[in-house]
Image 1 (cartoon, rainbow, N blue to C red):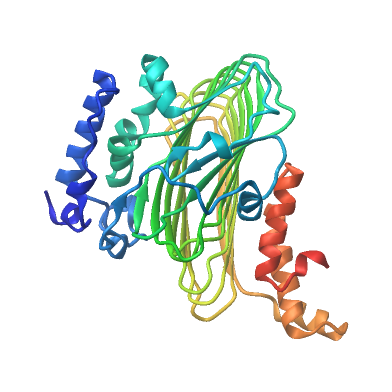
Image 2 (cartoon, helix red, strand yellow; image 1 turned 90 degrees about the horizontal axis):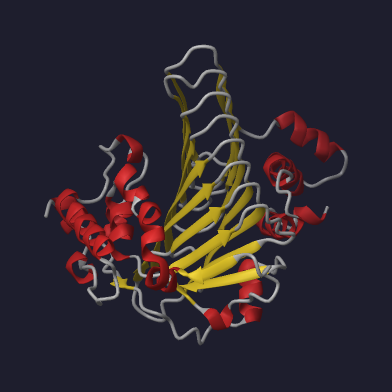
Length: 439
């Protein structure tokens, strides 16, 4: 075990459990993934993909493996307050384990199948084989390896061909430690059948004051002509860390849109990797991150154009206050043969203090001819002229700055098509800016 691995106190305590329920291929995957992280450790700033993220302090916390929680501090009302009531179906995962008694499935169409990942593995393990190993096999690092080795449960959503879901499926990931710091590894798998239409929402929240690491992996697979709109809200507590990965694979003519809003946690890393595997696929990635105090919120994204005639659009905006640090590390790859690719990427950042810091790194890697690609990034502060204009109209200085900041963030908030989610985000963003959303 190298120094980076041994830095994670109690790594040996997190060794994969052998309970006899896992099929042979899964037991082998868990063993090899744990061996991988034991030998190679966790990423450091010397790793190109993690050059902005210092995980050393995180690894020094003596995390215990998460266990199914008693949920004594949770109720439907408490979940509404933590994650919002978006209507439709709500699935609740506490400390990485699906909790049926807190979930609400009565509005779920009968054609859509939703199960805990643990029960799905017991019933249809072979069907899940190509999906559960992909993140680790294709993009190995210490945290995806740890997820592959230790994840016990989560959610499986299977949407049949031609189904249209009128209301969202809201998956709430709650951390409730009770006492000692814990690490959980929730998994979410969404399989979208041909020509289906669905909205998936993920909310990451926790109990105030709890110390924990949420190491989450979500896989979304779109068959031909499927349409999936995906929303993610990370609003963890200030004593928590969230390292999350979203892997997306798109079939011919499919359309996927991702909207990431990152507000909470002392350390938050929200990686998105999309592979456009067949012609005609389209993807849109939008993101808003608002670190403050000493928060570190990082947004690595990769869009891989692996087929011709595909389109990608990306807009990420950061609002950094106090001594917060924001990171955008965007990468677009156009593989050989992916002709007629149409891709654009934009990152804009607003610094609200002298101590605020942002790193922005938009990248294009083009290995095909006959493509249209563009990228750009900006970093700036509030315009003194704009602040003066509002103050000359009788608006106090603080309110004027909050109003201009909200207008900057609202470009992304306004792209949230799901009205209930947008209203919830508006309240959260406004609460950071003196309630300006009500103006």
